[in-house]
Amino acid sequence: MNASPDIRILIVEDDEPVRQTLADILELNGYRVLIARDGLEGLAVAKREKPSLVFTDIAMPRMNGFELLEQFRRDEELRTIPVIVISAKADRAATRRGMELGASDFITKPFTEEEVLHSVATRL
Image (cartoon, rainbow, N blue to C red; front, side, top):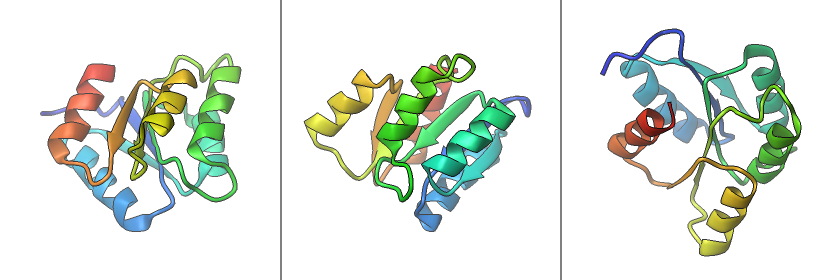
């Protein structure tokens, strides 16, 4: 798959190996990747860069993924950006809360390249 370099995907993830794996998958498939290490940094990058899509973890320092989703939904410029929650927390309550806050999809860690690319293709 060769994606348009105009498609920018923001990864908001505090775990460096997970962040790097996700970035590698996306970059190898032609996407431009933006990185943030927590929700506060992710919100700032999203406001500045207006990404096409966002991947966010749930459990992060300073601002968690649920709080980030809440901020996106309150912001007129960010609310239409699809957000994919990617988390080791696979319980029904976490999935439901993410969807109630406007998540477009929910991927459980560990994830496969196919899961990531399918979710991106579906949301874009």
